[in-house]
Length: 249
Ligand code: NAD
Image 1 (cartoon, rainbow, N blue to C red):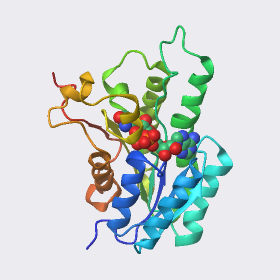
Image 2 (image 1 turned 90 degrees about the vertical axis):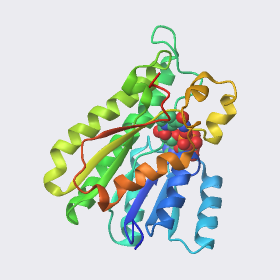
Image 3 (image 1 turned 60 degrees about the horizontal axis):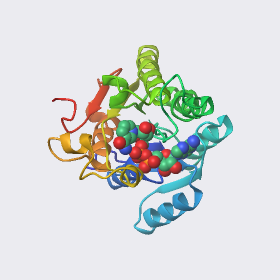
Image 4 (image 1 turned 30 degrees about the vertical axis):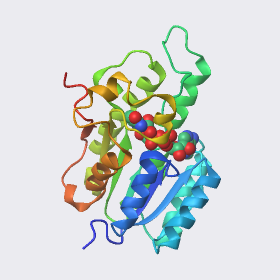
């Protein structure tokens, strides 16, 4: 039996990186997946690739910082497949404009908060009522090792990802009585196409400190798969660091 057989899943930021690996893995494990992303052409091409291989996958152009977009994404899943079992809030990421609190551009602070933190908040806002109706579900949020260990020089990103940890635990406390579990994954460096475009894994100090070699998107997707599945049925309010030992030395 597939690990997510017939579960209905929404994944944000599914057109590339960790989100894309998760769409593919979850679909392979029997889920019906609706994914959102701002990258419409990439999203549609990936949707065609997945449906072409027989998977139940739909793409909805979505900016997670916009209330109406997130509502449409969640509603599409429920209208298409009748319910919502899993929400994976994955969209986000730091940019080169982030920096020190004293001199980084203020609009970059609000961009990061809007996408990473508010986008996660909106996903939970629209998903929870559907999950309550069917007796439960699993929400997976995305924080970062930066928020767990403290990292200098990405102060907007650290703020947003720290907020996601607090939100995850607050929601877990409030919705366990409805059968809704809320957990978060805090990846260390993952070699997505975006990350590879901004650093050289051969010379980057964190990549070099990765004990088992730098992580790939699949390494995070498999942890998300566990949290999405009933295998983690009593796990909630947990924050999972996921890295290749780079903080261990
Ligand atoms: P990525 O850039 O490869 O993928 C992110 C996806 O989110 C992209 O397809 C992008 O278009 C989409 N996106 C961005 N803004 C959006 C918005 N407003 N609405 C909808 N979609 C949007 O990034 P990734 O490395 O796969 O990161 C995925 C998540 O993992 C992010 O939350 C990131 O902060 C987190 N993370 C990544 C790393 C890493 O090293 N890659 C480390 C820690 C945490």
